[in-house]
Amino acid sequence: MRVDLRQAGADDLDGIVEVFLDCWRQSYRGVLPDRLVDSLSDEDAYAMWHRGLAAPGVTGVIAVREDTVLGVTRYELDGTTGLVHSLYVSPSARGLGLGRRLLDHAAVDLAAQGAVTATLWVFADNAPSIGFYGACGWLPDGVSRVQDAFGEPEIELRKDLS
Image (cartoon, rainbow, N blue to C red; front, side, top):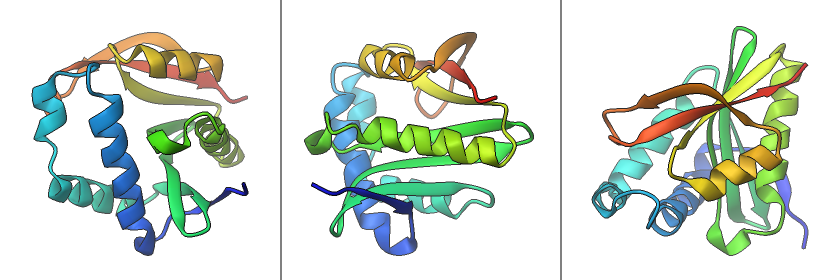
């Protein structure tokens, strides 16, 4: 099965939101409080991704098989630090290595733009994702936060790109 990585476009928004909502509603169930998982509407997800992909300096890359979006990452350069804002892979496509491919693509692209390090945020209770990121070389750097929008602790992970 051939899966291509390419820049996300406006026509990909439906597929991106479908992947995101499948991940949010399936993968975060039991990791985040049900009230938070259930609070995100389809309309909110569309608005969030529309803004996120249209933001200046942000790159969106999707994994696509034929016309089906299977995964997405969103990132940008901030000085010499790459910021990975999102990484989602459809639950139906897990185990194909797409998460690693998308994350590696972001890291290589960010390094080519001059990033020497990159960071991302993950919910502190999301052990499977923390394990995945750790296997890819992204490690906790001791920084944490709680965003008002989620009300749940997150930890920052960092990877050296030099």
